Image (tube, rainbow over all chains, first blue to last red; front, side, top):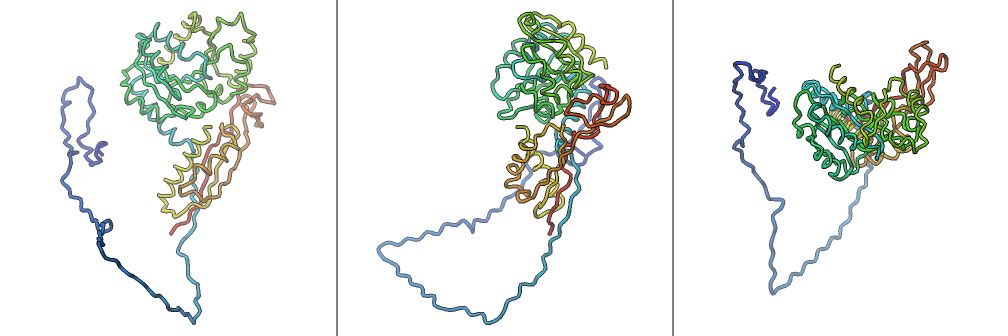
Length: 298
Length: 115
């Protein structure tokens, strides 16, 4: 069926690579306005104008009559309704998951590595992206979707760093969902063999529930946060593939116990990989780039 | 407060499915919520009636079936009750375990009145 108008002309749809021969085909659709007429009845809305100039009306209505019902009414009648239980057994997030699957198909077709970056606010997601784009923007062919409740600030930073970016402002929403990503992708015009960074809303709770269709989920923690973050927000660490430990340049000034953090995180997710980095000094970024490159190979 | 957006999803799904079944009204809804689903009982029970307002589900009784987490060890094959997301096997201390139950976030069924 034609996806545009639903006209049922399957036969006309052909698929060709741009350089193949015989790629011309015609597919005529008439989506223009078809002549049609609307009939409107205005009977119900007609205004009745009454003019009463220089005279008065005297209306009196007497209604004196009684209603007697010297017989019994019975109220025996059958209700023609039935009750039914609908066994639906449907995942409440099924709509999101369907959209996520569509996004995943789009990424596969374009050979896009899509990374969903999640963290609490202030962990350094945008700074990590700025450095990544500045140093590897060309090589990785970076595109960015920014998620925040308000402002274009992050998108402006990313654009300045040199990557095409769409900002999603969620208003009151506390997370991005797959439907929002699908809409953003339609505007982003991604090219093949590229890397998409989705910077989720800063929040370690809700974004864990929403699959965006990403290839991998990257959780970012900064060493100024507590070592027990994975214990406090297990859902997020359990569903992530890589953990970037940011701001390691501050370690000499802090009491952050790296070993304790790694142990707690591995308890929640033994498969989680870790890369300590500093968006300020660039420490660990080579490892981060190597990890991204590996994702495209799989 | 992602519970509110979850509740709105519940109302949308039931409204669609009830229309397909040509329902006049929805009288009961049964939800399955696992302890690891990321949904708080208090928050969802507050959000659902709000999301149902002015929908076909407005007067439906809602039954919340909370499901406790259950895990299995991939090393020794024993089943156990994990404490929240910590799923270290209590039998062999392996970290390689998986959840059998507890992630549910489902509309199990709903009752409708049909003409």
